[in-house]
Length: 512
Ligand code: HEC
Ligand code: HEC
Image (cartoon, rainbow, N blue to C red; front, side, top):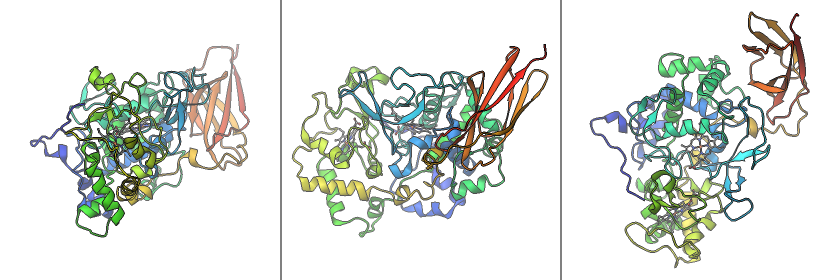
């Protein structure tokens, strides 16, 4: 554990410019954030927040096409109504399956080979892979100089294509975004290149597989601009690069301030904001030293601790980053804002109720390597059931921002394809008029959507049995057709629930 000081650079005013303030013009809703007790969100000088970047970032964050199989967006694992966590959960077996070191993590994509074809994973088979820690709230890290449970996404951000430093300090969110996009369990097929992702976005219809767009996104996408236009609006020219993707996503995240909780109103002098029980719970949080780590107003001090939950040989936590045995098993203190919305708790996801998570501090059934409370004091062994209830009421109600719970602006979002109920519906029928025209060294394939195309969200194109593309468009240029005398393409239409149509087939023989 060590003390983190946020980079404060008084010569660089924009570094600490409040993201919200910069977007005041965008919507009157921002004006109501004025009573916030939260400090301004640190913004790196290299990536100031603008409304165009926020919009682009919101589109990217919710676009499942950023994953290799069009089924997982950032937002799949970071849902506002679930407190920025994942409403689903899967089991990660840890170092040996079916034992106490199992973790509840987030389901990502199925393991895909470099062609994007499902391959059997040694642990997960053909099922979706599961992350090895519980999904953290994406809003919890806005003020942290390092992101992830172990702080492994640090502040210096380099362009993955050139190695050039794009952000000197304060770029943990940018680093984190690229980490998710290249993670082969979360979003990427094996060995996905940045070029593959950016080329895909050039052709993709933004949010083409999502539905029920919130107003700001519907307005931005009204005249069907492609991604190049959205990048041009945000960055001045249409080039799509990994740095720009990260800049836009991080800018969007920096505008998601959960600062309208009853506790914020209480602090601002509204004596009706919190109930009596919640006020007792707030008092108990202070009496029982909780706030020494879950420090107000962020409800985290962004430092790393081992609270004795899990053996460090199961997950070294912070030690994996620092190499210091002192840091074994330590994880970053999670913010407790919106914690009442989270479906599971702790980095292991082992508690399913808030009461169980609070109760953990009372049981004493913890590991010896637990860290002491900073500044001294005892864990809450002598807490009564009544006090535990007060704390639960405080965390559940007084720290919940109703806009997050109800997914209202700026926490509103589109519906994801995987959330739509298509599972019981009949699968789509096959695409029609599948044909090809030959260019000098390429083949242009095109087709029409199925006659009854309700519910078709994308197409899976295979060449001689290997998937070569997942598309929302109804054409594809195969720039590299094989030299064999004949090649067979198969095309399937898929609905939101990934039900597949029967294949349309096309065999092309070379003239001998
Ligand atoms: C498959 C689920 C999944 C997907 C997809 C995913 N994440 Fe995450 N995210 C996680 C998990 C799990 C963690 C915690 C990992 C850890 O700390 O070891 C996390 C951590 C984070 C954090 C760090 C929060 C903190 O307090 O440190 C941010 C920010 C974040 N994700 C944003 C994103 C963005 C942006 C994307 C898309 C580019 C994304 N996530 C895609 C599961 C996911
Ligand atoms: C020594 C620092 C420290 C103290 C004191 C502390 N916590 Fe925590 N708290 C943590 C850390 C670290 C985690 C994450 C642990 C993990 O995942 O392994 C955590 C997790 C939690 C969680 C789960 C949050 C989530 O999103 O999963 C809750 C709820 C919580 N603490 C409440 C409390 C309460 C109530 C008290 C006082 C009785 C308290 N904490 C005292 C450090 C502390």
